[in-house]
Length: 308
Image (tube, rainbow, N blue to C red; front, side, top):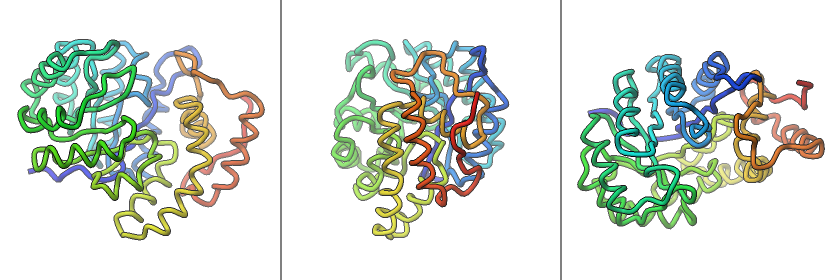
């Protein structure tokens, strides 16, 4: 029996070159950075990886690159969210064939799916692979699911073992799904960049799936929580909070900006423009925030804004 998944399962972005192509070298550096900074697992391509902007062959490229770069040093969870059961199954079968340790999928993407449709979707995934499946519960544009519904899927569908919870309020959902599912669910992980990690851990979450740009800090936060050193964990979280506030505004654009400043990726290019882009004042604020956190970064400390 494989070891249960627990800890910080970090998400690399999909780096793009300035011409919009997938930057495989930068992606490999993201994986190496994640390993070096103590990640307990790696997850890609998912929302923080801009999976929705990738063609299927590029999603397979990202999956193969991450699995090969991780080289069995830690578990790899591959995102296989699809538009239909057939779409998700094809990606999941590819992931398993290439050595993924698990897959993760939101319900059929791009529309509000019905509960019977969602059930059939996960049934198809469960029948297609022999590795664990994470259900990702994500608010609009995803289709949120009730804890009771997800618990039933975990009880009734083989290989549906884990849940990633990203609806509001996440802590209440963690508590409810663990209560409803019992032993049928091997664990629930939080998301949303780790903003609610302290509360989720208290409620019994087995980990979190944040973006990888501050992995060294979030792994330290997790380790403090595991050691029951909540006061130190809160002090660390409070120092991270100004950056989390910026992430809430800018999302993937902020993840990429920090990784660029840390020398991990070569460009901050996004295929679909960020909902908000950083202007000169935002860069000045980020300079100040990162300077205040400088001693928390264990490798590749961020630099002030560099010319592109």
